[in-house]
Image (cartoon, rainbow, N blue to C red; front, side, top):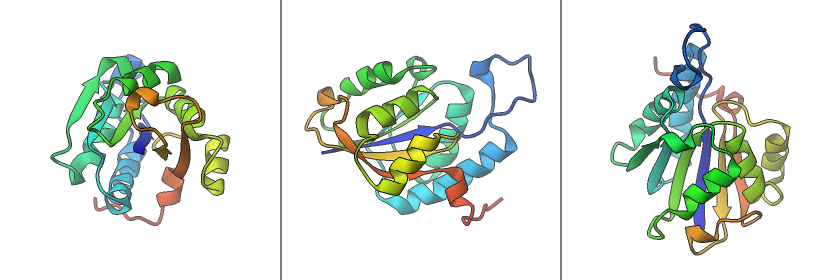
Length: 177
């Protein structure tokens, strides 16, 4: 059994239209949602064994906020995760060492959404499946239990959706700043 957390970066800023998409930072709303998400993740269970994060600015900024409660968690910032589709993300998971039992991947849509639907979008907690089917908004987190012994076995329908949390679901969690 493996655990996969799929986090779509928080809301990005469009204040500077001259910035390349890769270089866009988080908006104020994105920073606030990331802080609430960090507190939620800390309370939701033990940290994963590894983090894979797109090297785009908005994903790195999302990760920096979320990871504050996990200062010792190994993280890899990877350019190949930027704009990666579900098949590229699956191939990256195949490369994980089998000593890693859980991983968080911080990336972009549509790849993150497609991967969540491909791996566990047919089985799982019914209200989570309904929310996932409607939309995978910025800052949303899917938790999947993968019924595999090796990361090389990641394939369609190998898991089930345990939880799907959107920023709107965290509105009751106050910001510290």
